[in-house]
Length: 283
Image (cartoon, rainbow, N blue to C red; front, side, top):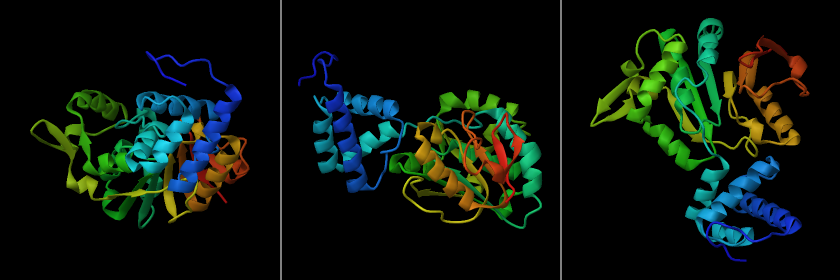
């Protein structure tokens, strides 16, 4: 099969499904990343995008490439876990966190927060800034994890593109920010970098929600817009992991299209905000 001028010839649907299944099985066995229970339409689009970018005529050819070339696998991984994030994304949720959740955290001697699927880190920066403004950051530790090494490298750098600062300033103000987002960034040579007083409270590490176990007990877990790509079986598994990782009375914060409703654990949470998908573990 030959790729010409951005157009693919007619393709056998059953063969395509087989090739995708074999590719995802190969990725799991070779690299330990399990996408086998992700939404099929989403995986199909992203896999074909990578095949197109690599100028390959079949998914089997893509499988051969990623099994023998780690850099090619990293490129595929970047397509499969496309990060969509920004500072204080969904400002209303952060306003709720600032006004309702943070006062509960202030009652604790030490606070552990986990951002699961942190992408390039902006959400973790945002929670750290809120915790700092509430006077809680000095007795907090924020863990931010992702399966993408490239995303984690960007997250550790703490750099914000200059052309995004104006939009981030609006998000910050809408979230109830007390001053200016620029107060938390140092600028040098046109590069804005998160100040060490904030960045040093965040630990970035690799973690796969699909295959790895719980690694601590947390008082808040952010897992936003991650499970929308999972099928129902995988969502159940990840919900069990998150529940296991939450301390009693801990808060789970999901994305706007996600919920604990209709999961086996729904009765073990109290709804704190249905609008902002904030739940508290009650038992």
